[in-house]
Amino acid sequence: MRRSRAQGSTLLVVLWTVSLLSLVVVSVQVSSLRQAASSREVLAQVRARWAARAGVERIIARLGWENENPTPTGPITLIADLASLAEGELGGATYQAAYSEGASLVAGPVDSHAKLNVNAMTRDGLLLLPDMTEDVADAILDWIDADDDVREQGAEAGYYLTAAFPYEPRNGPVRSLVELELIRNVLPEFVRGEDWNQNGRLDLNEDDGSTTWPPDNADGELDAGWSAILTAHSVEGGLTDGGEERINLRTTTPEEIATRLRIEEDQATAISNYASNQGNIMEGLLRDSLDRVAPNGSVSPQVVSQVRPLTQGELRTLFAEATFDDSTQRVPGKLNINTAPAEVFEYLPNLSPALADQIVYGRDRRREGFESIVDLRDIPGITGSVLAELATFLSVRGNVYRVCSRGRDEATGIEVEIIAVLDRSTLPVKIVEYSVR
Image 1 (cartoon, one colour):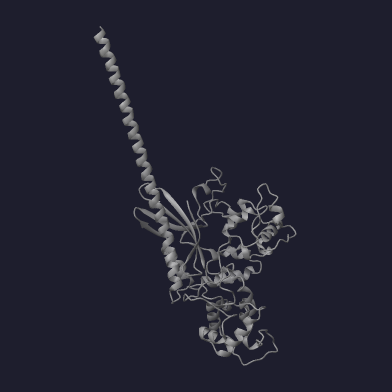
Image 2 (cartoon, one colour):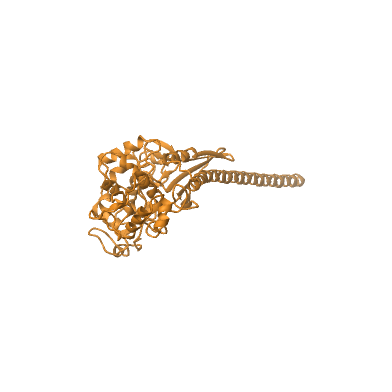
C-alpha cells in the first residue's frame, strides 16, 4: 500500500515536471515567434524606408543634373522628367512620389512656386483667403514683420508673452505653414483643412466623413485649406539655366555685363547706371527704355541718348542671367505661372481675372510653357509697364520642390512615408525639411 502511494506521488511529480517543461517550451516558442515576427516587421520597415528614400534621392539627382546641365530643357520638360522618376522598386519594396490634385493622384513632387509665399503677401492678398478675417491678417503680418509695432487688429510680443505658455513671435519669415498655427486666432483647420498630416495626399482617414479624425466631407477630393494655396519655402533667384551664379548688376562692371549678356558696351553702361540707383528694381527694365536712363540711373523723358533699347531676346537673357539682389539673401519666391493651378491666381489682388485667364490660356498653348517672364509680352494688352508690375510677383521658374515619397514592403504591405523639401537654388541641392512617418 505504501509502495503504491509512493509510486503515485512519483508519477505526479513526473507529470508536473513534464507539464512545467512543456509550458517552458511553449513559452520559448511563442517568444521566439514573436521575436521573429518583430524582426520581420523591423526588416520590412527598413526596406520600406529605404525605398521611400530612393524616391527622394532620384528627384534630388535630377534636380542636381538640371542645375549643372548647360543646355536648358525648358520648365515643362523638367516637370515631366520629375514625374517619370516618381515610381520604382528597391530590394523587395516599391516607392511612389505623388500628391493629390482634385480627385487625382499626380506623380512627382509639388513645385512650391505653384503656391503663394505667405512671407511676401500683402494684407489685401491675405484677406482673399478662405476663413480669413482682418484681425488674423493683421496678426500674421505682425508675426512676420521685424518691428514690434502692433497693427490695428494685430498682435505682437505683448500678447504672446501673456499666454498660459508664453512664447515670442517670429518677427521674421515663417519657416513652415504649420508655424502659422502659433499666431493668434489661426486655427489648425484653416491651415490644414482635411490634410491633417500635411503630406499633400488624400489618405483614408481624410476621406471617411466623421468616422475618424480629421472631419472631412468624404467627396474623394483633398481640401487642404490654406496649404493648398500657400507655402513658406519658395525662394527667388537661384542659378541660371546653365548652372552658373547670376551676376549682380549693382556690383558688376559694365565690361562684365556686356560680356555676360552679349550686349553692346553702351547698353551695359546704361544698365549699370540704372542698377546703381537704389530706387530702381530689376523689373523696371521691362518698362524703362535704356535711351532714357541718365548717368545717375534716373529715368526721364527728357533724357535722349543714342543707346539702343534692349530687344525682347536681350531682355530674356538679362532675366535669365542677372539679378539686383545680394545672392546671400533669401528672398521669398514668386508664383510660377507654368505650374500654378488656375484657382491660385484668384488670390492675387493685383491680377485681374481676365488677365489671369489669358496667362493660363497662353501657357497651355505653349509646349514648354513660358520660358521667360518676358514672353508675357506676347499676350495682347500687356505693355512694358504692365509687364514690369507682373514681374514683381510672377516668374517662370521653380527652385523648391516638396516630395512625398511612400515606400511599401511587398511581402508585408508595411509602408513608410518620407516628406522632403528640396531647394535647387544652389549647388548641391539642399534638403530644407525632412520627416519620416
